[in-house]
Length: 116
Length: 115
Image 1 (tube, chains in turn blue, purple):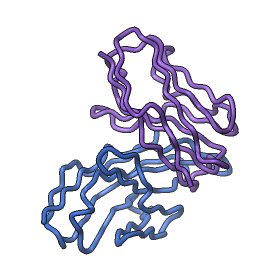
Image 2 (tube, rainbow over the protein chains, first blue to last red):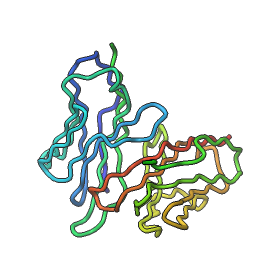
Image 3 (cartoon, each protein chain N blue to C red):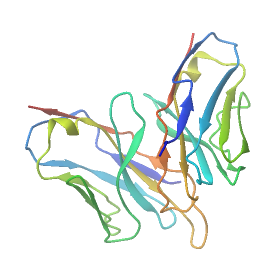
């Protein structure tokens, strides 16, 4: 079945540091890939997405590139801020050729802590 | 625009009691998803609907769990009888469709504690 593996946290960085959160996936069909962010006490919000190989998703300074050859979708940001502290989830939504999708399959989440 | 609305936000109940969680999707969205989040298992899809019809309920853990979507603007997730291991945060999400590229919009969640 489908699965998503992401680095375990917590990840603690200083403000303005470079961020990478690794994500790899296993899927049987043609997945779309997503990064969601969850702030304390809130639901998940879509951060960015990519729907086919070599697509780059970007939002709020975050980027991730869909790499089919390495089955990866690593999240990066050049300079993190304290306000980026949250839990980040990598996810995929798979579909067989010509078919619909199931719900999202999530990684376990990475807790990011940014210190001033 | 109102997002996905869930109620209650917090629920504390005793083992054996019936629990009903409610969700109002975003107007115009025709797909609705129920997820459960626990520390041990992370986020798991329980069931999803398309045009009010259940499409896949393979994630529903046991017969104690049931979900309905009587119309396009309302869905319920019921647990009867509840058990302590059901304690979790339950999220509802909606989207414009079930296709892989459709963004899912999540509600704030219901934190359920079963004593």
